Length: 84
Image (tube, rainbow, N blue to C red; front, side, top):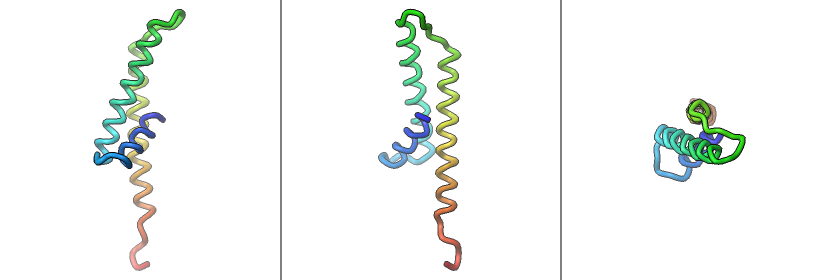
C-alpha cells in the first residue's frame, strides 16, 4: 500500500515518468522497511530479519505494479469514445 501511494504522489507531484515514479516508490518503500528492521533489532523481544526485508521489497514491487495497472485502467476508461 505504501508503494502504491508513494508512486501516485511522485507521479502527480514530480516530473518523473510513471515507471520511474514506480521504481522510486519501490526503493523508498524498501528503505522504509529496512529502517523498520533496524529499529526491530534494538527492541527487546523483536529481531531483524532478511526475510522480512525481502517481504517488504516484494510488497513494494506489488504495490508499484498495482499503481501502474490502476493508472493504465484509469487512462483507458477516461478517454472519450471515438465519435462522441
